[in-house]
Length: 163
Image 1: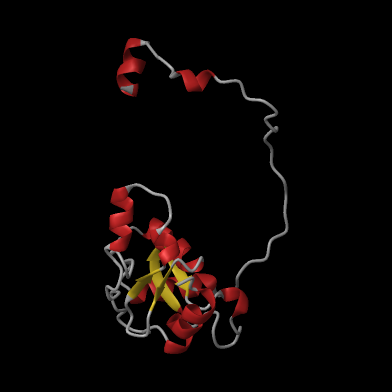
Image 2: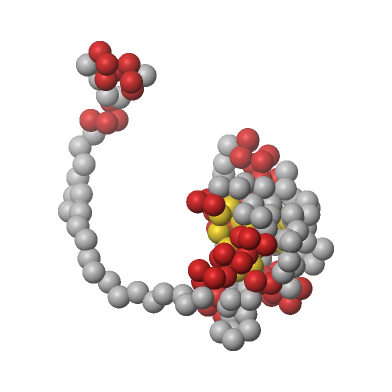
C-alpha cells in the first residue's frame, strides 16, 4: 500500500497522524561517561559458540537477535570466577533474555524452561501467549560444552525468578 501510494503520488494519512503534539522535547545528543564490561565480548563469543549460535529455548539463529545471558547477574557475580564463566551463560533471543533477566522465566536443575505465572498473566495476544507457554517445561538445547552450573541456576531460581 505504501509503495502504491508513492508511485501514484497519493498518500492518505490516517486521522491519528494529524494529532497535535504538545510539549514535545527537542532532540539532541549528550556526551556521557560509561562503564564498559571488560571480558563481556569474550563471554558472548564463547557462550554463543557453545550453543552453535542458536537460542537454547527457541532455536533462533540470527546473531543480531541473540544475547549471551548471565544466569547469575553480572552485577552480583564474582569478577574472578563468575562474570566471564561460560557456565554462567545461556544463549537466548532478546525477548527470552529480557524475560529471564526479569525473572519471568527460568530453567530448573534439569535444564527445563519454567514460565512464571506472572508472565502467563501478562496482557498479550493469544498467539504470543500460546507461543511462550509452548516452551514451559521443555528442555533447553544443550551446549556443546560449558553446561550451565547448578549453582548459578539455583541462584536464579531462588533470587531472580518470580515463580
